[in-house]
Length: 358
Figure 1: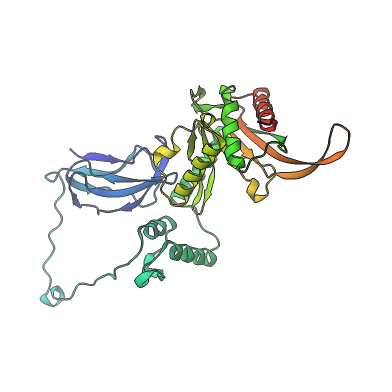
Figure 2 (figure 1 turned 90 degrees about the vertical axis):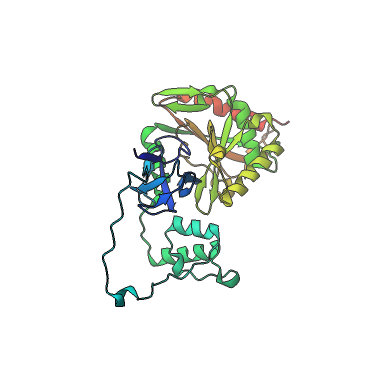
């Protein structure tokens, strides 16, 4: 009986993943535990190994979206697998023709993976590494040249999967955004993102209606606070999770965010780094953005956007104009699960906590 080999559940069952590489061909015989494919979902790569010995068939196409938990190929016992056709006899002149060989491409593993993700044929890339080895920078340069030559491209593979997930969030939620300005003149630390994450986690403890995830038409509050932090990489946006930041210091949270950022840029994040997020923080302040409408990180029900730190004129108690350090917070929440007043109360409590000197 044939065994179905499934797309691993990397993020959430039913979400799409893609096969980025097959290491076997249709009809290949494999051994138990042999590496047969590499898959990816939400920037997380996983290897797929044969669960038993047999012959693989029905391989899904590279970069074709497949729901996590769904089959990507079948594995039949050797005795059940169809016999390959017997090659017909050929004239000796043809049989003696030397086999054509494909030039070996020398490239780093990261360059090969990036080439698959971007659809770049490495045979067309000139390597600048030692002995002509193709590096990741070479692939990026080739991709930039390719984009310049083809200004209109279709979303494919993992990028298309991320786009579908974003559209799903907008389609299946009732997003509303509230904004408020926060005077942080007396409190602003060196690491704004870590400070916001730490303080947000402390405040969420008293606002469980915003901390958790949706399950169809039901909201499931979390018994802990795990903050997903949006990090921009050259491949797109990722949101790994800082766990229980309210129990750490701002310095400790800053170290964890830096660690996750380094893993993100090196493409070394694992599925466990994304698991269990209950709320998300995204900071565009470094890009000079004051306020924006972030997209909810589905299936969570709320996300906090952080704007730029600005010096603005304000009146003090005596009526004198003074310069104050102010930033804007943008809270987007799913109105189907959270009403405006409770969301506003959370934002007010967060503003008060951020403005309060230690």
